[in-house]
Image 1 (cartoon, one colour):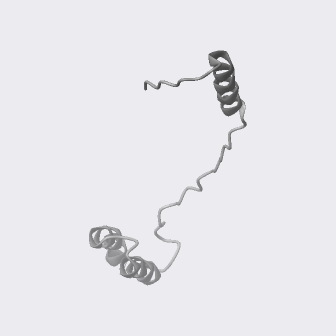
Image 2: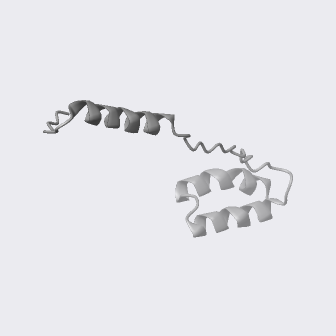
Length: 81
């Protein structure tokens, strides 16, 4: 970037720019640290397959999973019925 300024006292402007840069670079930066909680996949055998199928259907109806995901996830439970 090229910028041209006409000033009476170039040294004063240079000092002002340096102090603004120093203030900006030395200012404390906000850092946000979060930890992701892993979501365990649905484990078969813990709940009744019909309950799992009902949960999957709710996820499908709410748009949380696609039709393809629904079909893939429901197959093991259907086989248990």
